[in-house]
Amino acid sequence: MDTGGRGARRGGCLPRAPPPPQWGYSHARGDKPPTVHAWDCGMSGPKKPLTRDQALRALTSDQIPPCVYCTPDRHLGVLE
Image 1 (cartoon, rainbow, N blue to C red):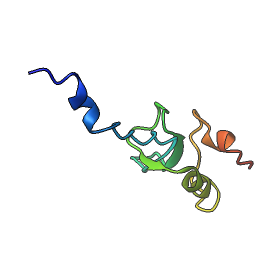
Image 2: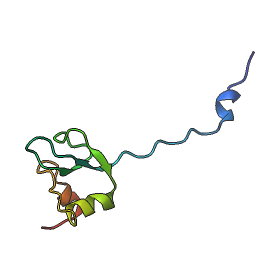
Image 3: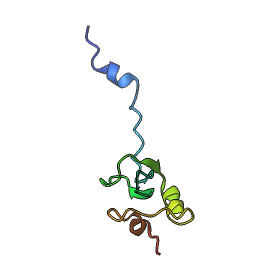
């Protein structure tokens, strides 16, 4: 039975996955305080995803320190 490739097109385009988060929050572990990270930072361990606005609020209003390795405060334009 020849479908002519129509079966693959019948459902239309597949939905795109949402873009990965750019920022994250790592919870306090042991003697390490909670910190804000760039999502791809390898120094953080497990992270909770944050939007840009949430990361800015965490760094400013909530006074959660930025990671000293990936410096999300610098990339987000937060001045101390």
